[in-house]
Length: 114
Length: 115
Image 1 (cartoon, each protein chain N blue to C red):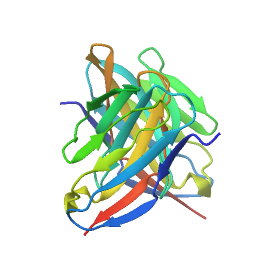
Image 2: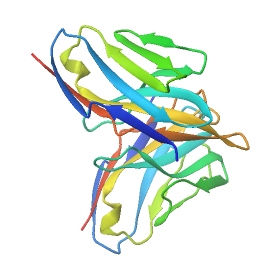
Image 3: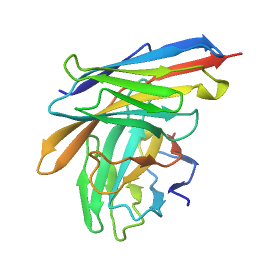
Image 4: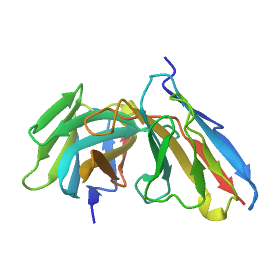
């Protein structure tokens, strides 16, 4: 059972470049989300999805796009990378909405924008 | 604004010793409180989830307590092992309406267990 799989693990981008962070889960979870983790701060929610075809913004959505065409996949797109987007990104999933359900995190994607 | 404060920021203990990590929160309306363990370079892994009515929950050598009146939680680690070296994150869930819940993450306590 792979759980939540994120790719790539590490990425260096130049300012203005675009890229997609991939996230896939094999637990048939309805709820998926993306967080960023910065030094000295708690994890912050970027975007989330409560099911295929449904996405919504979190606390820090600017500069990021998401889509959810299948239950399994929830990619995060950076359209024009900025140095402020240098961070560690975590994809997460849970069965149903987050309350009371265990949230499973991926191993993280380290992104550096130069 | 919902907030979760963890203390200490970092902690160094000898292998085999016990330790207690603290979490204070100002989250309303409270739904549940979670503790996660995050190894360096890895994603967070769930240790416990506690609802309003639960004041103690254990997971092996990890025991979490919750005092909903004072809005405090603690994570007690017994007979620490080198593998306990990690960041421990307190997360509080609040009901935000329309069947949705908002998670507020603490900054974590970095625990180092030394031989």
